[in-house]
Image (cartoon, rainbow, N blue to C red):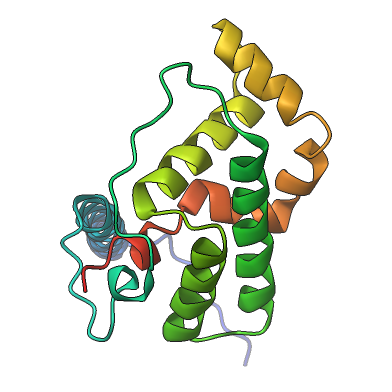
Length: 178
């Protein structure tokens, strides 16, 4: 005997249950997303303030040049600084492809910095100035000179795999205290 009962519309009770579950899932998703954003913010704040206490030898213990460095008053990049930043960017890219550990990355970074006899503050200023010259329009004569200096190397710096090193920065490796 065929089923003679017609399809019944959903009851208001089952509709409310469905809306309740949708609301609960929406709240859980938004809390999860908010928690993730707070965690990323605190991680960035921890890196930029140098509060990261990763065990092991910090890069300060590996660097030969422990002096203090002042940014040039003319704010012009030097060719050696651009070369050093490019070497670090390309070295980090190759270490990422090899899935090197953080200690191996730190040692390789310190080796390059020691070859150039630079300290952390010089690297940080050089990296920031290179990124600004590559991504913003020149405002001052120094910006124009830095942009002109980077014209030939622009394509090597802005490759998608190298862009991460410049934007994410190496502060996690550089700012870890000894």
